[in-house]
Image (tube, rainbow, N blue to C red; front, side, top):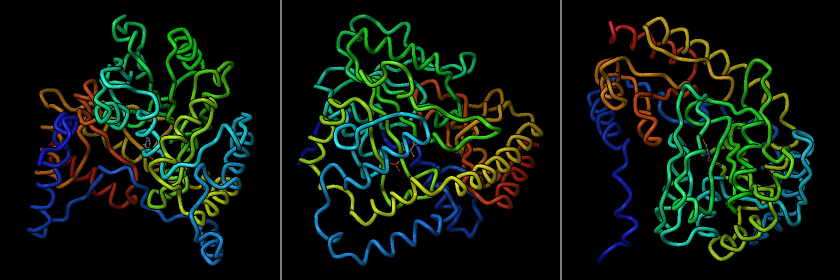
Length: 386
Ligand SMILES: *Cc1c(COP(=O)(O)O)cnc(C)c1O
């Protein structure tokens, strides 16, 4: 038996070795604190759970869902876009329900990328942008991303031969893992670039609503001409603590939405309609809940940033997302430092190198751990570093 060649291209999971060490420590009864995973620790809000309890009782919800998503869910997504960003999208032709945005992002490659072609992906980013290309027997060009440029992916120097074969450019701000935000002028520049070169611009806006200190993240679709070239991905996972529910949507350019829909209706049969029904409530009735979550994350962010600075690490307080991105101390690599923290402090952080070439030299700390455990973790890091 031989697997497809593209599977051999996928590097062994970077975090597997850390998982192995963690399991070995836990087997010895050692208390390991994980700050590695971007999965909210707090529960889905009660109003969404209540909506689910009602939705699951309805026999019409027990049949195959609508392929593109129920018209109610797509309309709720369009209403959210209008209320939140002032963006108009037609629920019938410009919105598609997804079984989580990871699925949608992965399948976008199937819809647009032929073997040997290219996607342009940030050199620090959500791994699916490039793995999706690999699974399509296509290539990734990593756009440089540096602290001195505010971690804005640089597409000024893409080689002509890459550009000629480039089909999708992926961007995502507020950014996982760097916590960076993008000024709207950057979006305008990316839109003009993609228009000029006939490239689909896919914007991953999973953290649009998780922000601090009054910062309000935009949708790229607010920008003039965006709908000519952009598809934007929104996920209910992070803002409403719904990672396990698998519900998200894509919206924007009609042709892109349609192409992604064609791939999906040949591969899956949509998300459980009851989950979509609860998703409508999450999208439309959660302003207060999200504000509460933001104040919790902001408090945790400040705890972590203060503690990291106290132990001499270089770190900026992010304006958005649920991550703190920190430079490793001199003489360490991402992996050596993450391993040291695990072995000496029994704390798991994510090595930045797992997010792409420019992630080397950083670690990511996730704020999805209760305050007391976060404090305990940074305290342990402090003694391990002393
Ligand atoms: C969590 C995350 C996603 C995926 O979210 P799901 O909707 O749960 O699949 C997509 N993009 C980024 C940047 C994320 O951090």
